[in-house]
Length: 157
Image (cartoon, rainbow, N blue to C red; front, side, top):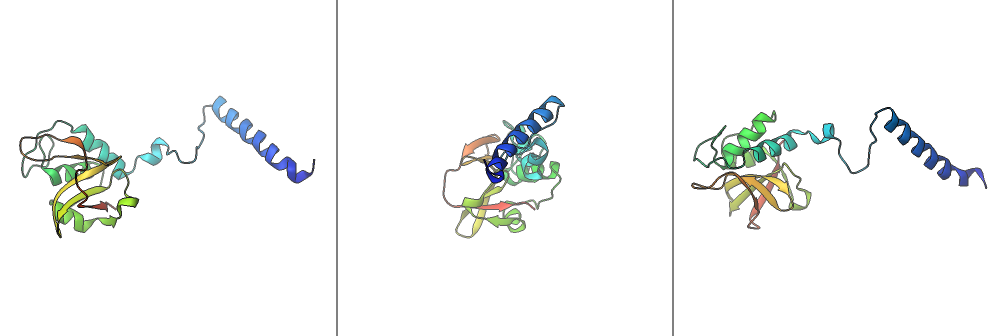
């Protein structure tokens, strides 16, 4: 067997030995495509978790927490707790974000509902076509499927 043919075999054994050594001493192994807890704790991820923690909180127009929310009040509250500032209204929040396409959206991005050029509602993208939001009077903060294609996405930076 030539030296070049032995390299993959040596790397495989070295990798296995390294992984076993790390496991034995309580280390961690980086797995491609899987975020560690530290890496996953971005402001957007934190904001998403905070919004989800408000599940069942009643809608109240003009409210920004901690017990009642309107749509932009929930996003403002969640991102503020995650260390990011946003303006108060959905339209102003849209203008403050980095706009991304639907194909590049990520959990924690803001989802803006619009009619023509007017933004009228906002929620936080949870993945799999769903958002956390505070819908309207008589409803509560909840996870819901996006019900229209008239949405834009924005990333808080």
